[in-house]
Length: 452
RNA sequence: GGGGGUGUAGUUCAGUUGGUUAGAACGCUGCCCUGUCACGGCAGAGGUCGCGAGUUCGAGUCUCGUCGCUCCCGCCA
Image (cartoon, rainbow, N blue to C red):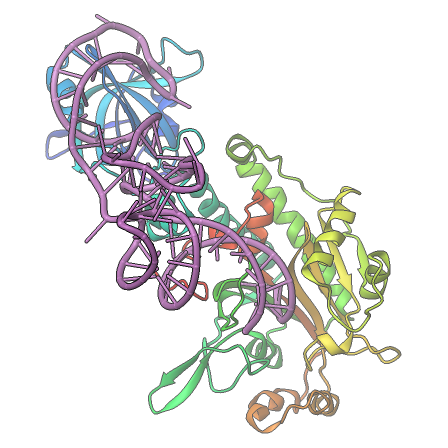
């Protein structure tokens, strides 16, 4: 995925003020330049210093490559002995095929220069041997080093790819992206799990969801909106799937028939994203994680909460699934070759007031999307009728006063609508089989984690 | 909020029933090595055993407290 400058080819010697200059190429591009002089920049991944020939494995965002320093190149040969692992260097040399290994390439070093030296003792190893990894807290304290590991770099690339394909698909469907405020005058859904901040001389709250503002976009007539943005949750959750701050991938869509339209949109979107990820990153994922990206078939299976409870042998039809039940449900469908399953018809008791209720049963027109046993989305049709919405609000024991600004959206003609919130890091986690969400994010924020 | 686990070198770990100089691997430093690729060989540095009390002739080891980290449940994306 090496981006190329538009107006000059790589590997070409160019002249600036009469001086011959090389432009830097990515390691991945070396095979295209065999026989040419190339300029590489990156980190010292490994050093093998020997008596007459030394090797330096260089790493950049695109990969690693062996650089050979022969004794006859006395300056470079002496210099390489002074380098430390993870120092940044630039290397000019001759690109060639590796004479000892078929299909591999190397660079015979002409000159090498450190850009910035690393201190010799690293707090965590970037080039891990024996698959020994430093403890979680130390890795995250030195997250910048942790992320230099190719397997973690790939997570960041995939997070970015997920962003891109998410937007790509939805823009193609005519969606408009909005950016809703992250400071709010009142809680957006419940009142128990918000960060309170000082907003000049009064309190404000960090948004735990863009929900209310997404619905304002619908009231604004934007019809199809998406948002990719941060959400904040002050819940003291100690699990492998919660963060206090994370990126939520939201959608809200007008003039739907019911929540089935939302499920249909989401399953198509996910197939699109996974198809693109497989296409562009499948080999890298296979090489580093040993995983074949599985593009699911359409439609995803659907099961009602009541059916799921029965399947799992539970009699409790009023509560949400426990995490254990969620995993068991995931296992059940995975055994049938299904990574994804929509869990539908949630009881009113476990859903917020703004979900649309069925008229003939105490259920909401909502669903969760379960990916390999983990909830990655909650979606629903929303209640668009002002009077019904207010009565649902009151039935949940909530007051209208603080939230009247939101209720006003519904007074002047609100389209029937629905949408979802999707946890991107949870998606990446399940895609790669990562055990903890903190490792699927750039920088993790948890109850006890405010650094770096 | 509830329940468990854990803290020894830069990192990952071992450390016997409480016993005299706390070990290994990787990393680091020096020397040697003509193609290494987990390079190899020789030599070396590196520790207030999280912190504080206590028991004891003696504590890395036992007790209490404290701090940090971590896992599971609940809450959810």
